Image (tube, rainbow, N blue to C red; front, side, top):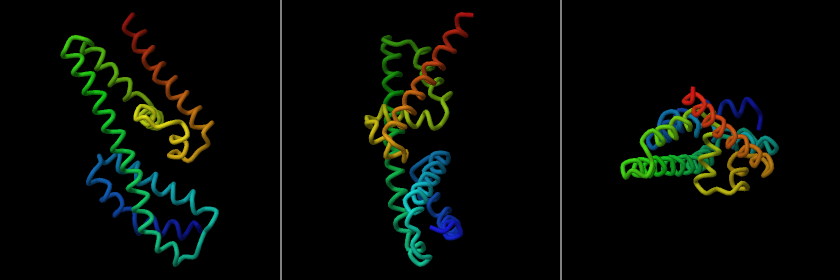
Length: 166
């Protein structure tokens, strides 16, 4: 795909894709999903450019790719909501104190967005090979990213605990 053709396609479709995603997602998540959609298109068609006319027919493909990214984002949001709900229920029942459930929420917010995404995919039950496919990288790279994300979560927890001890 020629870069100028890709830019034209982005200019023509970005607002429509964002509006479509925004109906079901937060503004931040919709923006991420739209960006991921264009990255996917660029990666898949970089090697096989096609003609400008073919590129203009890619609007349908863009929306199909967007829908896939949206489903993944919604699944992740639902899993996070279930996790927080379970923690809150446990806190109310006395099995986990409120401070602990607040800590989990705080830790999740401290992670880099890409680390949050990988942890969310993993906790949603995606295997490393599936995470690799979603991220557009090798299985080994996805495994390493997952390890780094877990370490970041652990480091954030240790930092909070160390601060509380002081």
